View 1 (cartoon, rainbow, N blue to C red):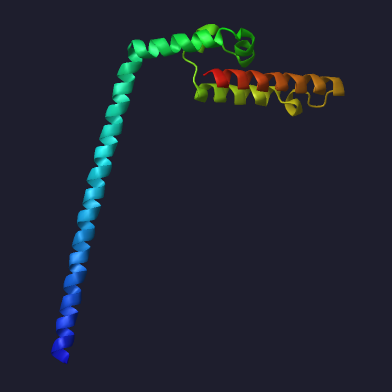
View 2: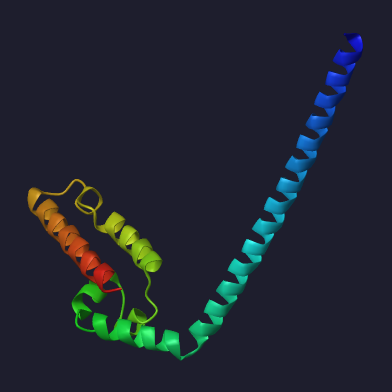
Length: 139
């Protein structure tokens, strides 16, 4: 019986070491796969940067500028010019909108003011929200 127990213990130890070895190979494979995926992503970003310097991105910028040229008042309200429209993206729009909305918020702009001033500030923030929606949809 004792010999069988020892043989069983050795078998379990052997199975355990094989399992650890397989786990190590799996971890090694996952690590090399992640490294390859990271290199592929970086390569894709490099290709995109090169494409951005090419005519494709120039065409995108020109098209974006053309779409937004119909809404110069909205761009101006957000603090952009038509020249800025070509390189405008959602991240930049979001940053500018948040900063402007903080400045123009009725609690800040009309702090301690009359009801008329507060109503004017609420109208201004409403216009800012509408301009943001229009420009964001056209990006």
